[in-house]
Image (cartoon, rainbow, N blue to C red):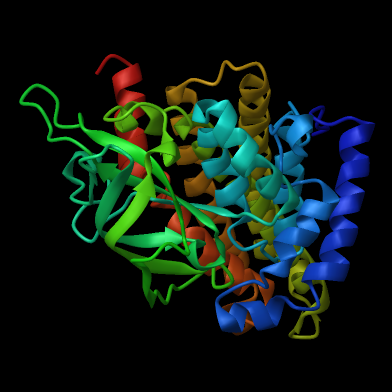
Length: 385
């Protein structure tokens, strides 16, 4: 079906991104996968391209107010070529919006120029060894000093994406005790430079997928954080954490449909070339039927995601809408990529083939950003259940 989401400007942007990937990413990607870390210089080159500062006002070097469609184009092209920009999406699509919504004028002046140029990358530290979805259980503390000039941060975090390639980390910490009426009261967001004394990296975690994006443990030992680095109002951090969840979940849906679409393309090309019993694998009815089913299912998902993008542009994307997109998108992508891997036979299990990377990379999409089970809970609540 013909998509109507993009115009000529978006397609020109797509051509620029495609050319950038071919020149700056593809030649190095295998090495980044092996090192579990993209080259830090990649983000500065993306900054030169003008894609690090979506939403940052032009006065600070950003692109100003822009449609989310430009970020979806990037996601589609990255999937199409089976590569990754490391934790680019985390920094630009997930963490930056918190600063756009909450930073003071002084904080914007300090941070935004570096973010827009790619000199300053962002990560966010929420999850702890004993605390995942239940953020009210966070034990990391940030105690205000007696003179009120700084917080003293202590604690540990895990599963933190992109920390080793970031200059600033938004840390969720407890600044006050919870109240009997509200366990979530007392959480705050602190923007912590990763070179702060007492800020330490633990293990670089070995994942089954997303190899080029580092995921680490972090620890904080008496880290001094100036009060000027408090994001928003003290003790109100939990309410802020939900503000960008709809966009985050939409982005996961965007990645899911882009990956599923790419998988169909990889499987089609492979089955047309691979010979079995004297003829291409694509000549068998089973191959045709499997890919036809996949194509129909992915087109349905694409229509749903495109509608979500339009709603996001109009600031009308609801939490339930985003949950439906994430749930349906990640489940469809899992089914489609699995079927496409099967069509590759034994070669589908080899990491030299992009379908294998897609298979491993996509599995976590049903976990991060809220598990599929959490999405079902949100949808059920929207149904009045």
